[in-house]
Amino acid sequence: MGGKFDKEFIDKKGKRMDGRAPNELRPLKIEAGVLDEADGSSYLEWGNNKVYCGVFGPIECHPRHKQKPDRAIIQARYNMAPFSVDDRKRPGLDRRSTEIGLLISEALERVVMVEKYPKAAIRVDIQVVEAHAGTRCAALTAASVAVADAGIPMKDLVPSCATGKVDGKVVLDLNKEEDNFGEADLPLAVLPSTEEVVLMQMDGELTPEEFEEAFDMAIEGCKQVYEIQRDALKRKYGGK
Ligand code: ADP
View (cartoon, helix red, strand yellow):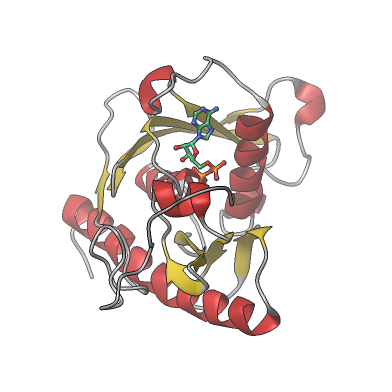
């Protein structure tokens, strides 16, 4: 976040470097049920991000000391492939991936009916194969579609998107340059039905007014993401 960048993020006509309006998402496509061997799965393309998610479970939780007597636990793992970024990421888990896995587990535990499956585990494996900013939001968005595809009951899908600030202006869904050189990044996941916030982080600085604007913009972004999630499931399973 921050650093040197000698171009303008927003031109005189109010368009961003990739031609988007400040409140416009990058193009988002989601498909449900793309992997044969997982109980549920999804594939997502969001701008240049590409993410697969596979769900296994509910299965008996191992190791046993992690079992909860009254509910299932969700074990989400987030991984960025070495070839997902231009300077080759070191393979394997690191602190950032571990943190994102935990965030996604906690967000999903708010909506999955975990009390139906005492002592069980639900494994959610996320592979980011191309990463161009906003991958934690993309991963969580893909994850709840894959959980639904596995037939695991949930109160709601979890749509997620980030807002941030570039050139002193609040914008939706930061691209790579905006994320790297912008002034703030605010990834959020908000349930459209209740406006319950199930993920929120912030990097950089926003004034209270900017925060409010960014937050409202993210709610609108999440509503759009939610429709695309629902559409992915409708295309697979039919229904309204
Ligand atoms: P998010 O992808 O959720 O925006 P970050 O803000 O941590 O998460 O990362 C922004 C972007 O920086 C990522 O989408 C990716 O393109 C790049 N990035 C993150 N970690 C690494 C890494 N270890 N090596 C190279 N690029 C990375």
